[in-house]
Image (cartoon, rainbow, N blue to C red; front, side, top):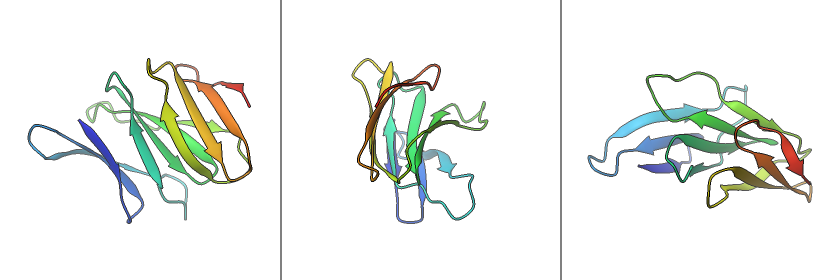
Length: 111
């Protein structure tokens, strides 16, 4: 699968085989738009960035549900990525900090 973030402020998960959109990820907070996205190396989680937090979503459209918020930056998150094994997320913010998060718990491990 392939994840994209677009100008309209959403992220979309696409089937690499069929080219069809599998799921659209929309920011739940009023006036905040998705600015970027990454796909977990195992393919089960989607990471989006919007405003001062990143969010982890289960990519299974049948399960849906709200995302797990990775909150702690005081400025907009500018970039985020999964570690190679998918166990951690790194975020970088306009506030001048970078944070490392545990993917399973959503806990900030380091700033």
